[in-house]
Image (cartoon, rainbow, N blue to C red):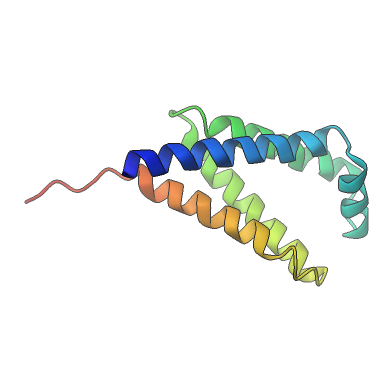
Length: 116
């Protein structure tokens, strides 16, 4: 069961981050508007897009999966704070749910303790 949860999480999260980051890298109109509304410079949109795509790809590579989780976790914390600061309470839970998924994935990566 643990392996199934881990596999489902990294596939779903990996695809979600690649798609979301890709939208940012393509300069999707709604993404540009959001970053402008939040007061971020346009270049930051592309940085976050690269982080999301890179982190999403890292979730599919076992040797770097942990680093992808860490980077994406910090990114989702920043996204949550951005929504909170902008008083976007309907969008606030989204990065928190993604963060919870990343934390759960990190927990499933831990090796089980051997019985004493």
